[in-house]
Structure formats: C-alpha cells, structure tokens
Length: 418
Image (cartoon, rainbow, N blue to C red; front, side, top):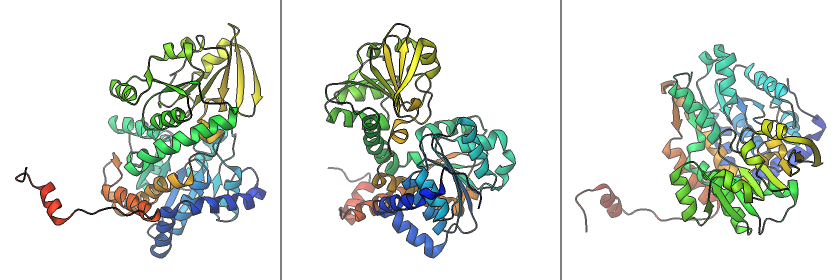
C-alpha cells in the first residue's frame, strides 16, 4: 500500500484517539453498522481531501465499511494529526498522504497522489481537489460520478465554477445542510477557534477588544463564545443584513480600519482575501494578535505584513512576532492558517458527527442518483438532513412531538383560518 505520512510508529496513539472520538459520534456509528451490512459503496473509489483528524478518520472508516476504497490527503498543511494518519494506514489499511507542516509543493503532490487512484467520488474541504482535477487532470472526470464539499469557502468556489459552466460533475454542498452549518459552523468553529487561540497564546479573553471580521455562521459562533468569556466583541462586515443582525445581537459594528485602531485580538472568518491588509496593520496597537479561522491563509495579507516588518521572530510554537517599521509589534498566529486546526484539534467529535453523517449519506445518495444529476451544486436532500437530526436527538435521549393529522391538515390547507 502506497502512503506518505510522518511516522508509522505513531499508530498506537492515533488508534486510541480515533476510538475516543468514535464514542462521541453515535450517528456516524449507526450509519457504519448499516454500511457494513449493506455495502452501498461497494466498488466505489473515493478520493478525500479533508482535514486528517480523528473525526475524519471515523468518516473514512465508515466509508470503507460501506465497501468503498478510500484515499485520503490533507486539506490544509497544518491540520494533519500525524498519529491519526499513522493509525489509518497501519490499523485500517487506508492510504493516507498527509504530514503536519508539509510545504505547498508537498501539499499539492499529496492531492495528486489520491487522484492517481482514479476516483468515482470526490470529497473536498475547500475545493482544492476539484480545482486540481479541472485544471490539471480533466481526463479523470469521465469516471467521476459526483462529489461533495464540506466548507463555505469550497461551496463559494464551486458555485463560481457552476456559474462559469466550468463544473465537470455534480457536487453536493454538505456545508449547506442545516445539520452542518447551524451546528458545525456555529458551535464547532466557535469553540475550537477559542481553543486554538488559548493554546497558542494562553491570554485572558475577558476585557479584550475582540474584533471578528465577518458575521457568517462561523463568526456568529465565535462571537457568542468570546462574548460569553467577557470579551468586548466588535464585528466588521460588508453585508448590511449581517451587520444589522450583529447590532441586534448586541455587538459593536464598524469598518475594519476603525476596529484596527482599538482592537486587541483580530480573527478573520470571511472566506475572502486581504480582509486585513497594510492599511489596517499600520493602525494596530502594539502587541495586537492576528489570527484566521477561515479555510485558506489569504484573509490576512501576510505579504503586506512581511513588507511592513523590519524583523520577525518566533516567540511560541504558533506565534510569530512581527516588528513593524513604525516600531509596533504585531503577533501572527499559526502562519495565518485556520487557527482551530493548526494550534488545536479542530471541532469536537460530537458536532462533526452530524457533518460527517451528511458526507456518508450523501456519498450513498450519489452512488444511487449521481448519474441522474446535472453538473451543478446541489443541497443535501432534505430527508437526509432531517434523518440526521432525528438520529442525533435519539442518541441524546431526547424526544420531540409529532403533528396530529388535524394539525397536518391545517398546515396544508388555505381554507382554514381563524
């Protein structure tokens, strides 16, 4: 079996961590048991470009239990958990191409490695797999049934491809499932970003002016957590609806340039480039902390930061201190890569349970229906979304009401009123 990982001897530790995460992923465990019996993915090759974490490991194992051949590479150079990669190779015989801290060339080499197996389904986290296929390996498209996409950033890229009629096969936007973005994006990103911030810096959040760029679901979750820990939350936005919502949620809202003058901590979650650039960097207070929890390391203009700095030094494992030409010092965390997976362990397994249940059931759906779909970006089927929510509640021991026949008739009728 071909693979490229850091150290196969880390497998024992990785397996223990995978099993720990499995205990907190009951919905995926239910799916895995059924997949083992029915083998709905038999004969299917799945190329997955995902964060190589304990939660992803349980997804990969579930897909293999369903009969698929699974090939995994990292979707970010700093998010790989090397012990998990070792266990997937050693204990579960799943080829993995991922090493924490790999450079850009190695990162794309690993993407090419999983694509060399000739996938029938792609699973993406950021759309690098899909973009590589369409730009360099178009010959693979004829054998690809469909794909899935995990992130907001990736869905934006894929919808752009669809608009330009460049998309070569259908994609299910797992990110747009309610059991994904309402929970994973909000509660997962909120908690894990705070976790990454604290592991990297060990600062006290209470009393800090905490600037969050963007107010999508991920940013909402972070704002909620930062506010709960006593921070003075400031939101910057370009969308008037989201900005208005942030105001109504009780936060200060202002342009990035104004926030730059007063902020202590800055975290970007927009999916766009150069949200914080040279104009904002020169205005920041001495000792300001900069981080990103969006998918790509483009939200903070690192080239501008480098050009403004007269020196830089590594002060902690995930902290680089830049001394600007104006004498102020600015601290960049995790090289501007997504903080929650670079300096922490990513989302808790219990919330990824729903996200990866969506991945598994979407793969099953695509095997059955993919050939009937157009070359477009689709939402997760509503019945799958609701079934995952039902299973999650069931696993938590929570029961809910059901509509009576009378209530169903009332809701479906236009004749019945007061």
